[in-house]
Length: 242
Image 1 (spheres, rainbow, N blue to C red):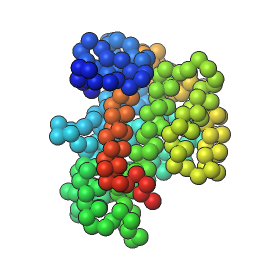
Image 2: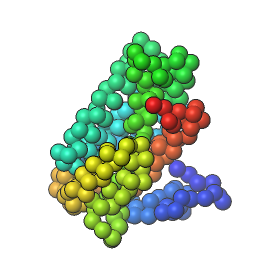
Image 3: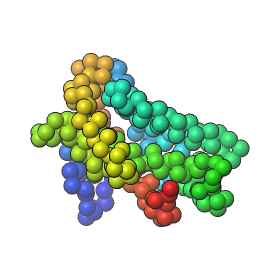
Image 4: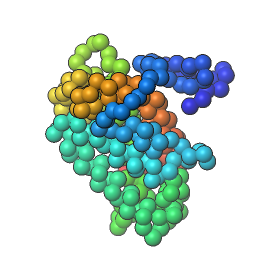
């Protein structure tokens, strides 16, 4: 994302000489070589990127989310329920995208516009695509911040403790008390950071180098996708969609 002269940059980011926003922990470019990563980082970045028209394409968003879901799958059996829930939501949105009214689901904006005009947002006979995506959107904030901690962990506290704390700042806002306490406890039982990285890279030092080099720019793109969607839902007064 290019930054105009004089514009503000979020804390924890910096601007390189070419005007590109970078994460604090991002290293310089490196030769990638052939590396086996469990998650396709290029697909993640592409899917969460805006089109030349400044829109988020639903197809790309779902492809990226399917890839992102692999992070839940490598975090251990405690996250299988979360992974399954993501899969079901993505499958529903793919069904709408490929259905008779699929033309209205090409972008996040067109989906919201269509469902607003046809009173589908709170329909009791058909699950709303906009409502379904809102749940994915909320989780995107958590995963983005999780990856930030994975790349640039704090020296204070355990990895699970850091992730539990960031859950409290993000996804917990949308959960009831029982779920918050349960999930916070589960996060404390996360495998160590090195274990997760090992699973993500299949134990390959080359793949780990690739991941640590590429993830910061992917995180920036995911954060931009989150901010875009947040603004879109806010403009339509849908952030509290039940």
